[in-house]
Image (tube, rainbow, N blue to C red):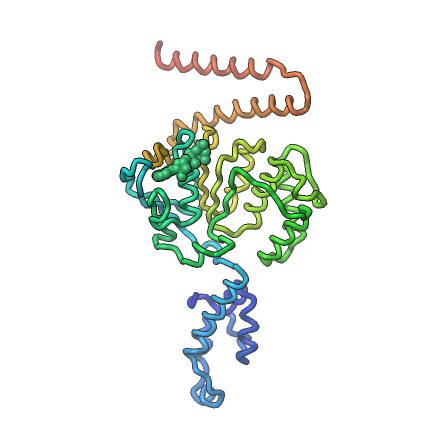
Length: 353
Ligand SMILES: Nc1ncnc2c1ncn2[C@@H]1O[C@H](COP(=O)(O)OP(=O)(O)OP(=O)(O)O)[C@@H](O)[C@H]1O
Ligand SMILES: [Mg+2]
């Protein structure tokens, strides 16, 4: 922070202008200098006349910024570059054998494994930035270090945004009021257009559209999930996004993932869905409560992903037909089957069968 210029500081923390005013510091013309450089420019006489203590002035400024950040619940966006998971124990108490995994910004990691194997548990370890104090004994590091306790125990966990499976709104607000509250707490400037953007994104994911005046309690399961995904992607400044089984929400899961990943975040998602799993850069395989393997999505698997997407588009089409009360037709499926047969024939020819 002490390397930022006064101009950069003012841009990032607009409230420091008050600090300058309170301390009668005129920083005009010093926008491209650091605060230290500005203070160093004062001559001795001036310092003595005004009884200015340089060190205290600098120390107090950093303290002021820290306090205001906590008060306003701001976190330094982009200040999280990596998340590390260190091994713990499986359900039988055997030590996990992976040597730890570090995930960086813009990476997507999927978590796969049988039902009940511990996928949600791993997400919870990350959410609580476990320090050997959860059933798995794992430890979570942020930027290679044990994270700040402010993150661990703040009521409004700003490190992690969690999209959990069971989401129920209990407050008596309209969608607009809910988004306004959230936008205000994030101090966004252009509130109206941000809210528009969220509604638009949410409605791209959900089936039947909802509006600003819709009470949040009357949103369906899928609609509230869609709203939370759009809200998380657009408004939340949390650098880490945890997703537990997006596929069962009845929303367009591929679009949902695209929206979430568009911003520079670390994304971990537990899934049983091969298409989502292969969209990730890597996958963590869980069994009996422990990490049993960490695999990179290979080029061959990425090819499979292309086929899966085609198949998925067809299933999505059938689902839409079902939802709209149409009679399903065989044409679409027939086409895919035909294409698969042709691919197989070409493969056999190439292999000289
Ligand atoms: N290493 C572990 N040590 C002790 N308990 C564990 C461990 N890992 C997971 N568990 C416990 O096992 C149970 C099932 O785990 P979890 O809910 O994470 O499964 P899951 O993989 O998410 O299953 P699903 O696919 O059904 O969502 C939970 O009670 C969890 O706390
Ligand atoms: Mg689970």
